[in-house]
Length: 76
Image (cartoon, rainbow, N blue to C red):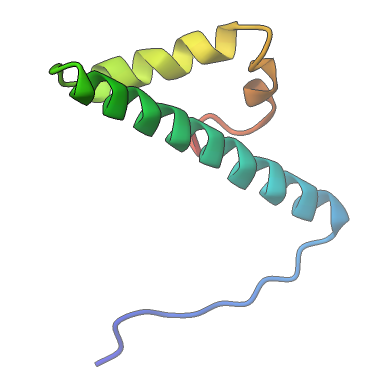
């Protein structure tokens, strides 16, 4: 019984750029959330989904991370 399927995609240059931006932004958001959770765990606190989600919203509003608005929000 097959457990998965494998597909090959052939994106054009524009699609490839969008995919790379999306993966890059997802990586930054994941690592930031993980760093927040680790730091709070060291301080004896726990951070749940709600706090992590609000961190993402506040990140998007800052000038430093304004480029997060360029990618699809569902991917983040």
